[in-house]
Length: 478
Ligand code: ADP
Image (cartoon, rainbow, N blue to C red; front, side, top):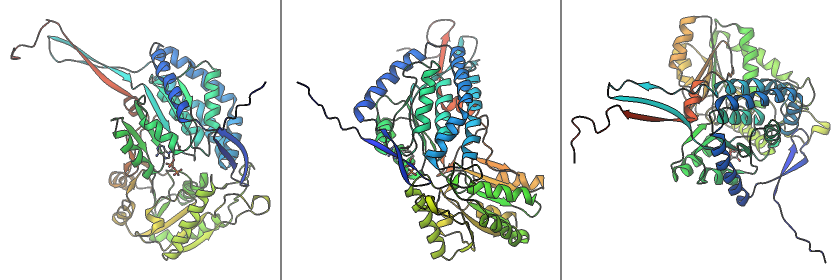
């Protein structure tokens, strides 16, 4: 006699954003499985502790070499799953081996200090990993986020349980497979799948020692509150409403290029999007007219075609949010200066919304205050530095800012005055692993990048050794 056991396994459907069709499904990690994952992580951490920094680096360098061989595969998986233009996903995939190598380089360079407290003591500090790190990442740059959650975390001696967004798990799952293939031991890198409930269970899990969250600022608040129950520390990389400020003395051609990239690449689905463009009044009308021409000519289309500049949104939900925001802009009195054409035919069911430039915006408008995470730019006109700063700092966020000027002193004055964790002068959205930056205001807390990461992902332990054993002179005996 045969017995049939019917098992219902929940799955996440994977859509192709350019057509709206479902093309894959990924099993969702159940809460029972999550306990097993964390048990493996704890055991993995105990073993990883015993691996020298040099050995850890060796494994990470091996991972980087393999990722280099797989650039095109990662780029294609990502473009299909996220709908981002292949030119962008390829550029990201090309950068990832370098990211892994940068962090590999730190694995055997985590130094402590020796502290001269006086002749009676030998006092030193060591940096120790937290242990099991829960990494929760969003759907906009899934491969880069996964790599940036795996490489530094394990280089510092932690292990990671990573959860990509339910809509875009494919490159993170592939990365975990490559980690196994190159010999990174069991339990050191694990990827779980599912939606916010799985993320919430990770945050509250008693085995979680540190939570790294990247995503929407309101979700960040929920996570911070949940983590507080176990006093689990969190690092939050949240959204932004970044100003990109162009003065009349700027290199206008470069500023135009950057303004386009700052808000239309990744279909605007970037925390660093330069979604508020501030242009000095003497050049404003001409600058906007040239931007408008470029927006009208943008090729919005199939992300897997090489000449596509802007793809669809990752999800229908995100596309709807962008459309609602565009409507809110119109309803509140902003003027649509330009919109791109959307593709039809077999892409008619894709998650597209038109790249849009708004002028005549005022500081209180929804499109100016709320993060859209779509290809929508609001353009302000300003008179002088003081007004530019006033507009730039007039949101609850503080993630990044761009300043375009050929006046060195002005660049420094603006950098000093802007309330944000990253300032770019005469460039935009340059992200290097070695450069720190964190959010101000509702853009988050806990800077990462370069040596900030060493401190963020490890903690300091001090050891005081008395050279003459006993309590210190003057300490009252009991
Ligand atoms: P969005 O709302 O735009 O999808 P989120 O910031 O909510 O962006 O999602 C980013 C990541 O956070 C995703 O991996 C998502 O599954 C996860 N997430 C959502 N809600 C929670 C939560 N309450 N606790 C932990 N993770 C969550």
